[in-house]
Length: 400
Ligand SMILES: [Zn+2]
Image (cartoon, rainbow, N blue to C red; front, side, top):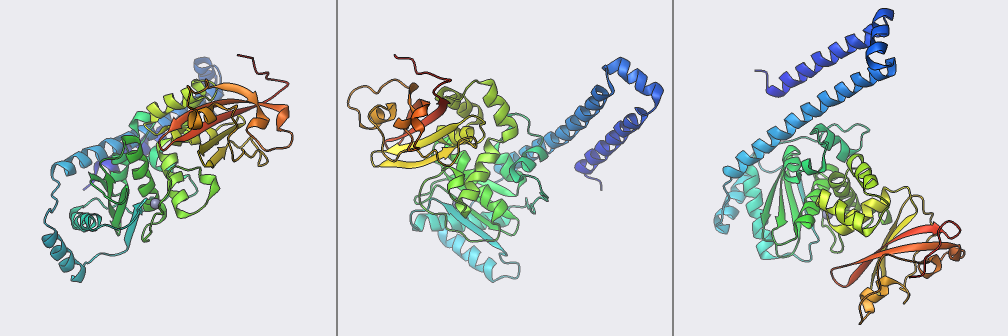
């Protein structure tokens, strides 16, 4: 039996063959002359063929995406989940001792603070549900290509609103479930090439999306391993550490905010600012912190993003054009808007505001530069500041 996918593949192959025929025809002088008449130049005619191939590949991907969505909806309708722990433990024990017991387990819990009986029981339920889950997906063959981009393009994703994280997870063999977790924010349990991702139903939606992306990162990079995600912060800049957690965070960020969609949209919104971050966060349904980090890391302008609490600097991220000797100070100075937001009893100073770069950076010649500070407050009395560095001779601060 030929599946629909096989049919689409054959259609695509025929289509590409016909384009290739057109392509070889272009070397014929008469045809080439006609092409120049129709398209203006041979380059334009070839560009047209390229675009047709790209569209054909994207539409094949979109076909995959809509099939995955339909299969996911079907599975949600038919989901059966045990609710009796004794029954679940019994089922699991039978299964483990049976011949086709679990193989190659993957296990990771995000921001687990401690283990709790409730979470352990819900993990047992996950394992029982996993047995019923027929969507098995071996690791895609990524080759040299960036993994997140590969997955998105395989699904023909060309707009931010198409980044449906549950459908993407399904396509990768992982089913997402929202439930109560008491000691961690998200967890993945996998056996062979199927997995269940459970996300805390109480977390904000942007955070849930990032957590699912993070667990999928473990699924792609650390399949078959048992990890204990370290307690601590999520979405921190990934260049500060290279451990398994940062790998998973980086994957989540690349999957939810792929550069091929993020960069052109960010550029169309104007120079980097918190207003732009807010707009991008709404478009990509990501947190402001994760979005700001991505904006800085993908930017060509000299930018620094720094986080402070009452006890000083927590972390920072820099764009590639800001060299390593641009170190943000540990302590905040009173002239900054961020200081007012953390310590101020009166209304905080307006942000964005312009000031000398030496107020923010320890670099010896920092005073030759100015900085535009745009700060915003996040939870737990943390303030994040987006700093755009400008050469003083090119950019003077206006007294306000
Ligand atoms: Zn993790």
